[in-house]
Image (tube, rainbow, N blue to C red; front, side, top):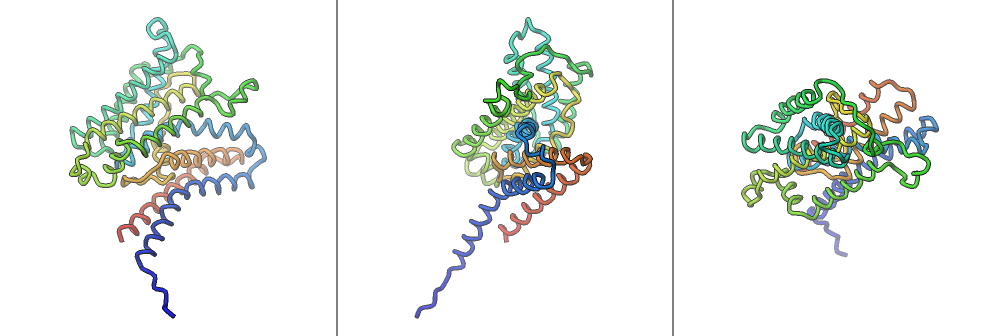
Length: 336
């Protein structure tokens, strides 16, 4: 009888395949565990359809910002200015709506706000590529710059705006519109998520984004236009920050230059919890959305149980640390 000899390469390939599947399904598994935990120990209201709709609405703002951050982190960058960009978006919308003769339609006001926010993202990309300064420092500066611009435009106060259909994007659904299942803003997030996922998987920009994040120097030697990729990625990051600003305006119904302070941490955390690597080259749209959902479920569950805010922050912080530690462990094994 001949003894069966297994190639060590097959074992390595099998372990790599298992690691890839675990990386993809890990965030979904984590979401299921967190939701099941609160469903078992929390009040019955946590499992209600109304609360599930509330969780979806609460996830939309962070989820929309996380779409742009997913692209940026995959490319090996970071953007600390997204919270300020969201605040600027709310101010620009309210400012435009109060000038009905110049910008008569709410859609035009939202478009102006998104364009202004995309311009902020483009400015980030230009500063990073032209000055050759690390993204952390550049976006730390533009975080203050954009926040200051929002306060200057609003004269350091909230801007009340006339009521329009923009206010209903994230409003709770009335009985006659229950057929939508979730508000229109949530459906917009789903549509944008599908679009970004298709861009990452099937377009040249998507391939170049992963290439730049995996190894920028190798990508440059292979002919990838690294600077143009970064400009496109940071512009898209600003654009999705603007869309998150539209969602934030819908929730507040005013332009507030002080809103979304610290939102950038939630957005980055959503991408990291969802399997994105701060070293670049890894990440997915589905993972980022699942990461945003995990944080919303934790907040909702803790609120339903009457737990204080500091408990929610501790739990979220622990999850972020575990996610980063797992990413480091996976990378160290891959390079071993």
